[in-house]
Length: 243
Image 1 (cartoon, rainbow, N blue to C red):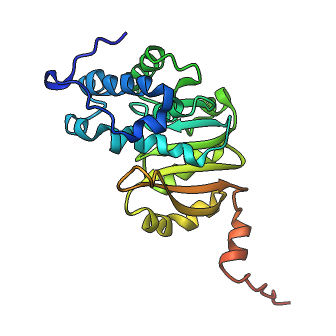
Image 2 (tube, rainbow, N blue to C red; image 1 turned 30 degrees about the vertical axis):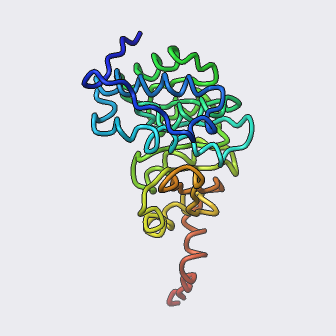
């Protein structure tokens, strides 16, 4: 269990006014999570000390903003969850969601389990493993949405996220200012993996500056080599063998 010590003897920063609207009657839980991040999270190397001052806007509210893109009672997986971002703020703001935090590293998964227990988050489970492992997929089944935050490039995120989704489920990858350029760079690979309707959306526009930037894609059927040839290049001509 946690023994919270604050960085430099200072408490976690106070939440901005917008946090009350986002978390409502669960603001106290969000504040406790902020304390866990600035205490044990920093001590265990899961959050950099320089991030403490911008903890709410850049990390907690930024993550919770994903809730704008999710329907009621959806099943969500957060891959490469790290310190619980975006999954834990999302689960606090949206208690109707069922959230699985997927994290391969032991020290991070231990932090997540302790945090979930400390915060009494009955709608959150922790799975230690890699998103691409079949055992991980089998453990919690298909999801309505898979979320991630600064995990890897879009081609890798697509390879890890899309197989975890039900058909037409949503991949929601939080990205920075280069999101659109990254989409253009990896669009062909993403489509080949089965991503449909790939686009950049923004959420939290009423309380975040800048808003959270998210690459969204729907899961479809992966394209076979034949499909890619049909859409990407003309068919090869048959050559007549000499008689």
